[in-house]
Image (tube, rainbow, N blue to C red):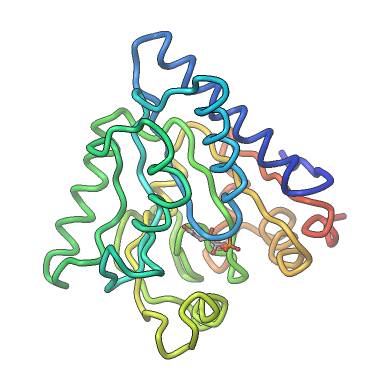
Length: 247
Ligand code: F6R
């Protein structure tokens, strides 16, 4: 399903409300809510709204377990561009989540440790019964997580090489292109497809053409987000600008 809203604020409130409902429903059943989380500019409004609900509406994160999609490699946790730092600043520092319940791919590993870490990441997700809900942004290459063109439908958590377009899009955050890492650790397309519910969001005219390819184009590993066409419980929320090329 594709849902068009006037602006990102409207989408953020709707998505945060769905996440809050899931958290409360699971809490009432004495269960954990297992969330797959994204970074970047797109989900910031969702996190802001969740923090507001925590402060003003008593939404507790005590029963929440999180797995982030990706992290640059290599990446120390205290760096400005670290996704650990992003998640702390955008969400975790402001809610009552247990730190042991938070999982972000580890950008500090030795290269030889990465494959084992990735296999363990998959086992941990599976150990919680899989992701209840995965939220996603989309990159101009069609990536979800950092599943760049060529990522297969069955791909799992692994180290990847970032596309040059993705590195250029990140160069603002890193102040110059040379500072952007060439690699990242990311959940695979298969990891994301296994989530029980998937919510992808995209805003702005810069995303309009990739949104069209992802939603109306053929399903191909050249556009990882196109695989979501085959997910039985996925929704794509766009603002009017990102919806601009849809027929
Ligand atoms: C972030 C991630 C990426 C971003 C995508 C869009 O964890 O996995 O796929 O969602 O690059 O980034 P923004 O939202 O900054 O346009």
